Image 1: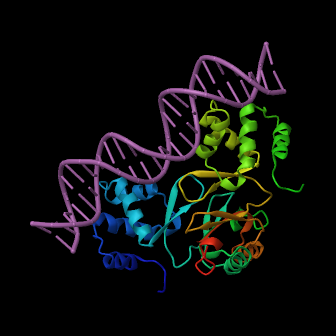
Image 2: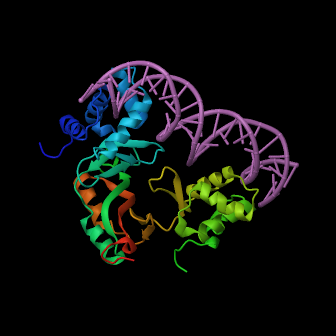
Image 3: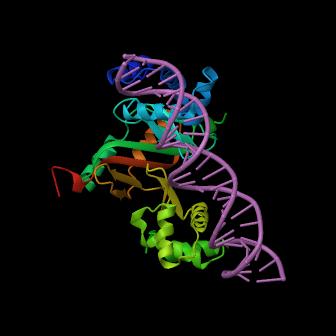
Length: 149
Length: 149
DNA sequence: GTTCGTGCAAAGACTTTGCATTACT
DNA sequence: AGTAATGCAAAGTCTTTGCACGAAC
């Protein structure tokens, strides 16, 4: 339990917002939850959708992702490969991403590590931080030579 | 002096790398230095270029930016508006960006505020950070209601 | 004189949009 | 029934690429 995003939570939010619950939207949400770790692009998600229902169009995937993003149920990421990637929103702040420059694996850091940074920015620049996005590029545990595979 | 990127530093690096110094490249570098604070997109930079030499093509701007990025003289940013933006590289690490959600102003934070964060990630996830990119969304000094304009 | 860079236009990738049809409430 | 969502295809952006010409070393 807790604030982990799950299918029911998303469905409930959509119901509260009076958006129509279509088979396509249900499927898209289900697959977003199922493949949370994949950070799929719209196109990748569309492939997953088509494996279940080949009639769903790519535009519907885009429109549903836009809808979910407006409802703060999904956030889009830019992981540097020229296309938007999507993940379920996990709370007030985004979580951080560790991008391994060796193997390309994407890990997540859920804790908010930036409290001190945000305070520093406020006092030095008078800038009040509301949200943040942090990408850390480096070498993951498995690729690290000292801990080798 | 110091590590601030300037025209001569960039020219020297290009000379060292045996890339040809063309009028177009000189102009592009000059304008990148002149408009450092603008974080121009390729297209915006192209407009600036054309104000001086209307014959320069957009493809040349893209190719020059790619070249400079490969030489670590420029880094591309994703500030969330769907196009790549560019700035001169300023050292080992990228600096951070403060994006005001009210007025859209982009400020920069040069200090490296993430030392503690990177240590935490290393010890908790065994991930060795090499570079990072941090965007802080919030309200800048000028837009802050308490300090009003 | 070679080699590399440039300009142009075409192609490519990702995303958005218009419109007739379909499905939800 | 009325409204909103869908699918398709076309259009829109941003970026890359092929090729002949021109410039740098």
